[in-house]
Image (tube, rainbow, N blue to C red; front, side, top):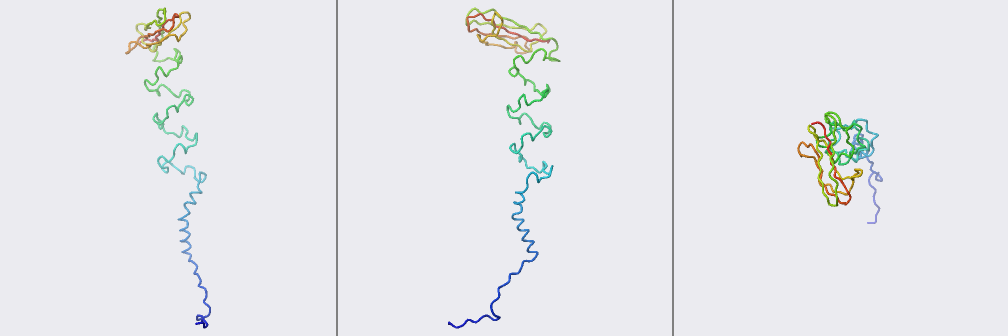
Length: 227
């Protein structure tokens, strides 16, 4: 112990050299790096401008992949909607308003039977000039009947307006009026206002009660056309 240390044969130990990788190994490593990170890189770099026009067709889009939030306002135009694609079940209540309809857009053939009822027609919107064709089948006749004047509050009246023989009822109405100038009044209750008889009506019946000591009259009118 404590003596000199002999050196290895051949002098100082030479550092071991690392053998460079072969061309085949380099190619394999590049392919591995692309496989691991290349897809994520490519996905992050592809945007709308990189996609060729018409490249994404309908078969390439997953079902329900395109939702309302992914559509620009005005992107879906009439020409892009298939025939009968938009039906009543796909329209939200109140979504289609009068301003959304083209002039003459709603024609007779597009209105279901019994779809337009009395409560959906504005007062004064239907007159004889707007009724034509087979619906009228002749001139419009308006028949009006007036009850006897009331004498005291709580008086009741019943009045009927009937179409002439050979005519049928298409509309009617009733209301309390003043006796002096026939103006409508709110001083009475209208208990009944209906077509008579219920089947194939030919007249209009009204009944009501006044709520004032002022003189009032109950009026009923029937709009008739040839049967």
